[in-house]
Image 1 (cartoon, rainbow, N blue to C red):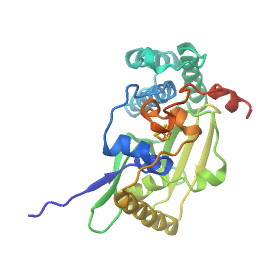
Image 2 (image 1 turned 90 degrees about the horizontal axis):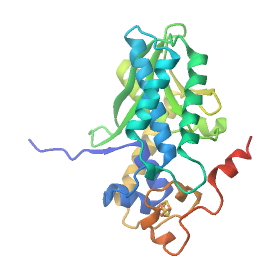
Image 3 (image 1 turned 90 degrees about the vertical axis):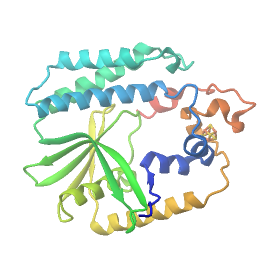
Image 4 (image 1 turned 30 degrees about the vertical axis):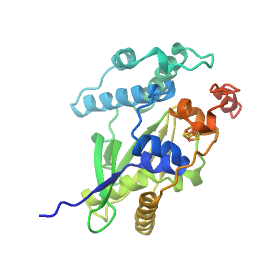
Length: 275
Ligand code: SF4
């Protein structure tokens, strides 16, 4: 039987192409492994996610870990996966980032204990067929999937550790969780309600949204068109922007060849003025 050539994309792969084609080429075509793969912010985000995944896995087993146990788990994971190269020359040390994560988790714990919103799965892998032939797929991971017994809706929970809060318009057009809701509807029934919930841990706030069937159909088509455009692309120019400060390929990027690789202003300076 003829083997089908299946193309699997992720939301971050699509975002990478939209942000900068050269970055996309480095990462997904040339498959260059950068010297420093993670920023310290990415490390913080990954350990906080890992800790919440562990917390809810325990809850699923009918055990609620104490706050101290949670922080011990976080600290151990931080140490195991930390590397000094992660820190950039921006004046903030490891302790600063470590403590930020502790604060996020304590706030979350105090707000949601006893975590009884009926979690079904954590880090749930999903696939979505974008076309009828099953040639193009989206793969992703839902941070946490719950079924709300009061509303009868499925809930897709996503944790964010960034220092900026998006406007509601941005949330209403967010692609990632909307795509994941297509997968949830495929699993449990198209008629089922799905609520999208983002937890902005820095602010201890949650934002919610929902999508209609029409919106999801349109999203599927637009995502497929974007993937087809990526497949046709032959030119991959750099796109310099403030986001380059978070790009792991900056040290090898020709657009930054003759420039200082350290941001002129510390990155947090701009962010903190927002509050
Ligand atoms: S540093 Fe900027 S321009 Fe260069 S590859 Fe990364 S995102 Fe693109």
